[in-house]
Length: 293
Image (cartoon, rainbow, N blue to C red; front, side, top):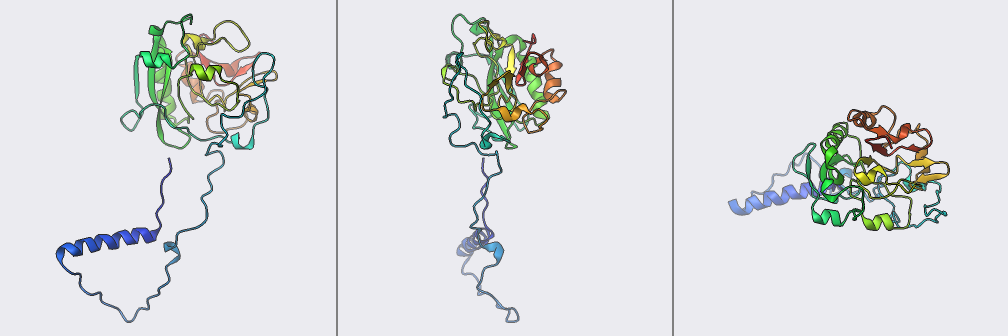
């Protein structure tokens, strides 16, 4: 959200117009008294002159116009081939528009309901998923964006763990941990060709684990990914998202990254969930799950 900045001249003009409005109701305004001892210049002061210099956004604060449109070449398994991170995606710190209405209040808020039909229809749930649609809770929660503003997002999660998950995100909100967007994975997104630049935070996705045929814990609604771009999955040459190589340097302390023993890891550990950043055979820095897989 941008805040408009008005030059001092416009503010002064508003005061003059306001005064004129009062005078028109009360009668003609008295003639001004001129102090001959003071010289009056017709030239405006520097503060009254609007600046013509363009406002340059902070690097990483605005998404590039091509975001989500550049399809990558795929490997034999259908995954995108990892490439170096473009300069526009380094120091990534923007927040995308909310996908659900803002929850009321000015602090953390959450609403939990059985997932309604329209939410299920736009999710990845289909008959044959390892969890029934009645077992999925539709959760709306507030979070802090990279823009320093309060936002509202949504996710599907197993109803059995919904209360614990809300407690985790309450702690992240209190710590002002930034999130780019919180949304529900759709069938269209699941089937779309890879662009390697997504950055979701969410829970339920009815899909197998990476490189396997068995269902992921996401398919049970028992896993959550957070800021996937700042916290990529890596195993050998495979990086997901494929353009997130810059964030494989975990010594970086960029906003939105997750590190060992930080507030994100501790909050999930307190509900008994494990972090993929602690795994040995691969690293899944975005991933938290109830059973540690």
